Image (cartoon, rainbow, N blue to C red; front, side):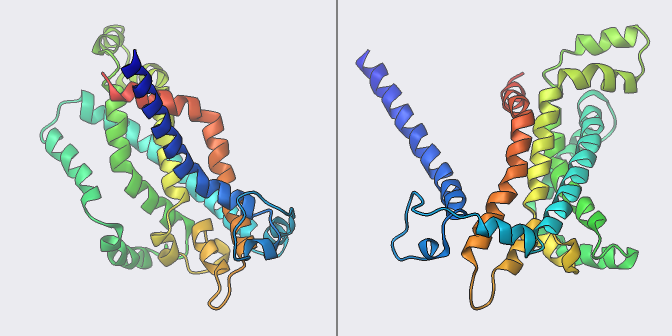
Length: 275
């Protein structure tokens, strides 16, 4: 009994430490966005605000291009998420259920995409997009984001499909259902948590992508939030209040997404972990 109590205390302490480590930066950013400038830059930082102001958010929305960056990020992230899910689901089904020569080899080859850093393919992709006229186009970012998220998304989706008993598909085949009907009307409702998990992964990957967005996008009017933040940081001075307000506003869409499909995301992680 004593040992169980000690284990529970140690577990609780470990979880509390992890929560503090993860949550402290977010707390610092959010509280800093409502502090007066003099409190932000004072020598002794304050964990809890001693002042309150919304001037940083007013400046962010009225005197900066943040609304444009936000709109661009939302468009790129939504299209990237949609195309990733639409391509990952049939690809995972083909790798898991269909028999064709070289299936396992091709599946492992796709996962090798994560063995190479993105900067390795940056210059070749830039040259390719320049030839087809996609430089400074949101379509270029969508293509890159889908290409980066798709291998892992296929792997995730394949693990979720493995939880569906094969007898369900065999019964549908006996009833004469084609492959498309089986995938859309039978499997998709059964692996909805997995689809939500893949969608959240693809959205966050696109939302936080900086390397390709900073190179493939040239004009300021088409920048996304990560690249737009870089413009807020000046060479000789930094408007910390504006930067913290922008970081706080950038968290909101992700929080809304988790609020809508977070329950499916958690259940999807647990369901995909076991067969």
